[in-house]
Length: 120
Image (cartoon, rainbow, N blue to C red):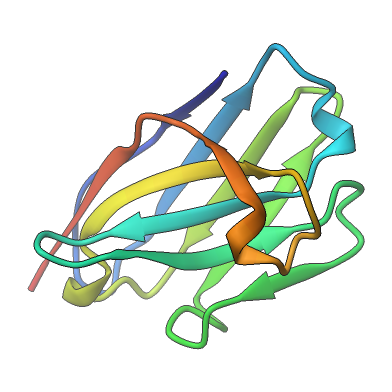
């Protein structure tokens, strides 16, 4: 089970941190990722991290502004979002991968999502 938290409303240029708490599986064995879905749009990849946090991968739209991390002792993944823009507004989902961290089609376990709204 994956449970996101930390969403909310923030002004453009501000920061927000998301968390994803995992249970029911060996967290440290799975690559993890963040995805987002804006109203009327498809769900897009945001960032991913390998099982032991040795590698990360970002969408071009968030590179340099967002940072993905994980704590395998706490079974929790994080997404620190800085310099937020109105176009970052979306429901953010955490997901676990049955394949490699960069293989976006391999993410097959999903949280319920948390809303992030960036006002201009």
